Image 1 (tube, rainbow, N blue to C red):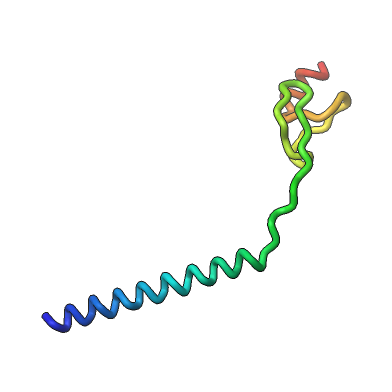
Image 2 (tube, rainbow, N blue to C red):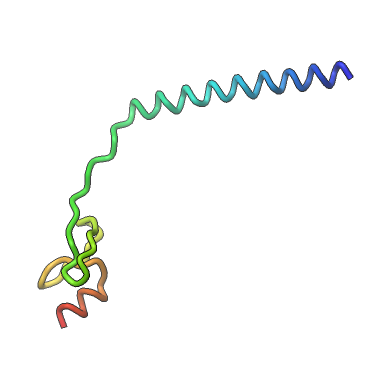
Length: 75
């Protein structure tokens, strides 16, 4: 019985140690990383939805959120 209690105590200490070590590593990693840079947004000429410029579909008359909206607006 006492070996079971010692094993449980050892597991508890190990779990606490790993939890503290992991949380310190994550907070230091975030501080070293730069925040993501903002992305320019454009409004869809058909529905007005704002999408990132690199995700927007470019057409003759402007920017669109999808190819279907580009076809519908430019038809």
